[in-house]
Amino acid sequence: MDIEATVAAIGAGDRRALGRAITLVESVRADHRAQATELLQRLLPDTGQARRIGISGAPGVGKSTFIEAFGRHLIEQGLTVAVLAVDPSSARAGGSILGDKTRMPFLARHRSAFIRPTPAGTTLGGVARRTADALLLTEAAGFDVVIVETVGVGQSEIAVADLVDTFVLLLSPGGGDDLQGIKRGIMELADIVVVNKADGALADAAGHAAADYRAALALMRPKIPEWPAEVLLASALNDTGIAETWDAIQRHRDALGNRLADLRAGQATRRMWAEVHDSLVDALRQDTQVKPLLAKVERAVGAGEITPSAAAAKLVGAFRRG
Ligand code: GDP
Image 1 (cartoon, rainbow, N blue to C red):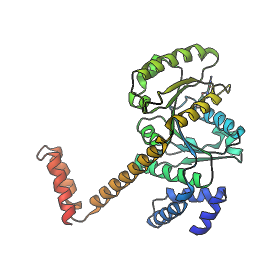
Image 2 (cartoon, rainbow, N blue to C red):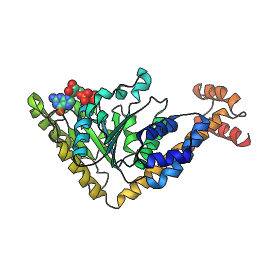
Image 3 (spheres, helix red, strand yellow):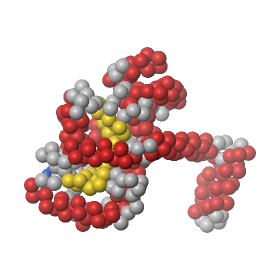
Image 4 (cartoon, rainbow, N blue to C red):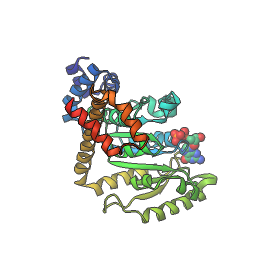
């Protein structure tokens, strides 16, 4: 890849160049990784201006329908929107449901929108890194809003919440049942909770669910004192609560104020350490001194012959000497 040409093309908003660059950052090949690193470093000064929004929820809660309506609303405000869809479960299912362009037909066709599924990854860390890189690329391409969509399976929300400025949790009007099903930790990540499907026969249940979530959130410590999480009602199907969600996101941004820079700095630093951690562990596992010990030491720990910390010290010691 011609890095200079790609930098220029992405800066000019060339979608195909953006698509190819995302493919490059997703690659695990060493030469691709080196090119991707160079490309991202070159584009870094052109990043950071977008609103980074995470939208998460269980399958069937209405994410596609919601993002389609929400994206349309943003486009009507004159904004451009990129949607990066993360679906770690598709790694196991062997395909990407999120890749299906018919999920968001309006956005898929509109020139102010860009939709990109993150391909199945083997590790959550890998998925998070690729999504973080793809997010930077879409910013360099000039998108005003980047939505990172994730399917609610616990760990992935935590990773995605750490990539965005505002994390929106979509819930369905299941009320009490749902509340038990949702891990408290995920509720704690939410800046905004949207109870979707607040329409027709589900309208009453949605109202009750929203009250339950408000009560639950009131018992949790807000992420920042200036912003106790808000609970909204929406119907993605009927296009209600969509403008209100965008309004809440804007107010959340205002509440963050100068903290936004700190938030992003913290996220970037955590990602750096996560990568340092992953590469060191990789190097250790591949090390010629360590490799022959691994199975034996693991077995000894499993059999209770050596403590986990003594075993770790042994492996790290062998790595240091190696
Ligand atoms: P996803 O799996 O979270 O992406 O959910 P989808 O957007 O595919 O929606 C799942 C189902 O819920 C579909 O049958 C949608 O038509 C329906 N749905 C989505 N939003 C709403 C809504 O606001 N109200 C109602 N009644 N149904 C909805």
